[in-house]
Length: 131
Image (tube, rainbow, N blue to C red):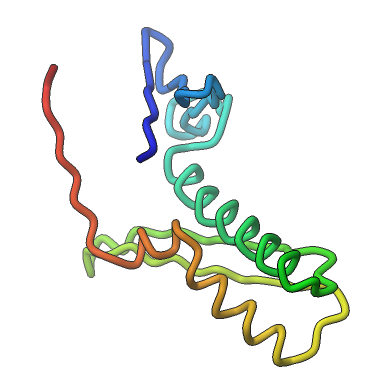
């Protein structure tokens, strides 16, 4: 289980996010939304989670197989389609290294099996309580 805490005080839209291990990230809204653009917006953080997980999963898999994967570049576009009431995520992946087509095809499947991809591809339940 992952546990994250956040706090927002008087500074508009600046949110300090902390993990149990003490890592800290600042989230903020862009200037045009009234923030100061001090960090990733909440939707950028969500897209970043998918990019980071996909990249790390591909790296671990290629290393375990001893494949010559030199670099992975990802672009993730996340959009809320209000009319259709759905989230659309487009992920563009570039693989660099001495890889044959069979390896590339396998890495494509592995990308779709990263934990964050699985979480975002299935039903999500959010439970909220006031403490």
